[in-house]
Image (cartoon, rainbow, N blue to C red):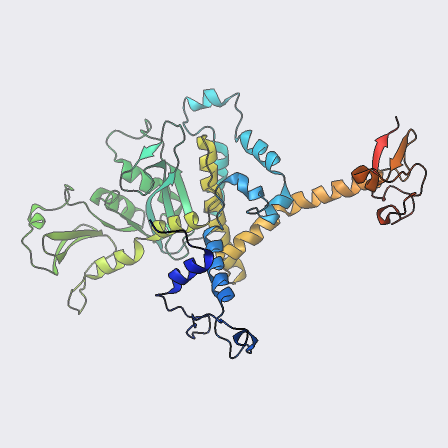
Length: 452
């Protein structure tokens, strides 16, 4: 069994086989200065010292530990954020989160009979309304699902084996392709009794999400869960086109396209009223089905793969919601909770912060990093509360009496520590510096005790 390594031995073992470079692109000399003469070299001649390598490792450790392990550590002396500590105490924050509600709990039971989302409906509706009215999206809109990770107890919790987080609350999201602005969003609450029996869920979701943006010549990109020929015809009647993949078992696909013996990079086209089906074979025994109502004719690239322009455009426009989900997860306020309204509230805050950044850049024309924008946004949100706290403290100081109330006598602060000084009237008998700072007043650093 190998013995324990000290710090110097561990660093030597880590850096023995590596060849790091400093910030200027110059190779770092890993040899340590073993005599005092090497330590007297100038900064231009001195090789990289062991403290520099230690600082480099410390920076990496700091980057690793910048995410606090738990919410309580935000108020920790070592891991805490001074900005958070200055806003409110930890107990105050936990008390607010414990009693946070978004509706009237006395009428919730009656409303929940017809609305599973009753605990968040009012706040969520206001959020969606603001998203719709504050931004005008571009031509291309992407629709997909988002699974917000959560294991809270609710009747519409979903399980998805293909997601990194298996359990969560599902949302249908429509976002702008270029800016990743969240234009419209709907929670999935399970089976909807109001939906007509012959209408597909996918068609209902797309039409509800696109309702504010129809009749304006936009295009919507969907995956094989949503895309269908009937949906394309409904959208085309509202002057909106669709571009999406089709499942190979979809009944709209002709039987002749399901053969697996086609040559590689082969393309087949099928046309119907208002829609074009492209069947592309990127590799043997694999076919991609693209349904488009925005292409009257299809062109192929003059390359080896001979890729159709419908496939190229779909690859460009399909990742709007996926990129948006990555962005909101990168800087998230999500924390552990057992209440699903709080989980939905966390997701709403993340989405609102992303939309606020898009609106800020669109209105000001500045390209600011999102992390810098979020820090400044947090400061402005807490500005009013911090100013109110300062005002209350100043008001309390002004109301304090300038002289001591009768019946109490001041004692020297030093005496409170070692019991060697007595102060009964107005002057310290031991000559302590702490007792002779100012004339006798309430600004003195004395500890007041009631007279015996």
